[in-house]
Image (tube, rainbow, N blue to C red; front, side, top):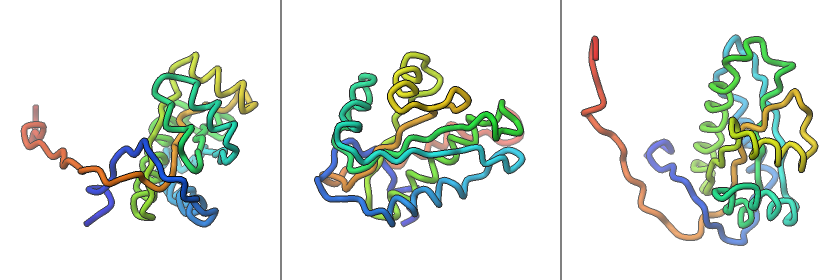
Amino acid sequence: MNPIFKRQSVRKYLNDEVTSEQIENLLKAGMQAPSACNQQAWEFIVIENPDDKISISKMHKFAKPAGEASKLIVVLGNLKKAKIESMIEQDLGACCENILLQATYEGLGAVWLGFHPIRDRCDRIVEYLNIPDYCIPFAVICVGHPAGDGDVKIRFDESKIHYGKY
């Protein structure tokens, strides 16, 4: 089945290592995302250090999975490289979704932790990782080998579909 229908948010991980090759595949998938005027203003910080993962896991109440993940991918939007700054959030959202789908394809588990646009979350990670002021800390994606199999629920709902007009 297509990875879209297998993808789920995984918040608990085994201690198994995610390889550098797998991380590179996730980043390649992220960079394959569509972007406005092909601006591709994304950048990434890969976090492997256990102390850094623990620190990030404490940055907000929903960030706890970061402490257990094998690796973290911090997804940034570089405003200096943006041709259409107002579209950067859409670009980064597509990038993150590609990473999540590739993680599923690789047999990994992942979850997207939102940081932007919540100011205190952004301030914490910017300071901690020394992110320049022209980069938006959009999200942190936790990656690891899933601890257990969850049931994926198909979310198709025909009542949300309209043809022609609302």
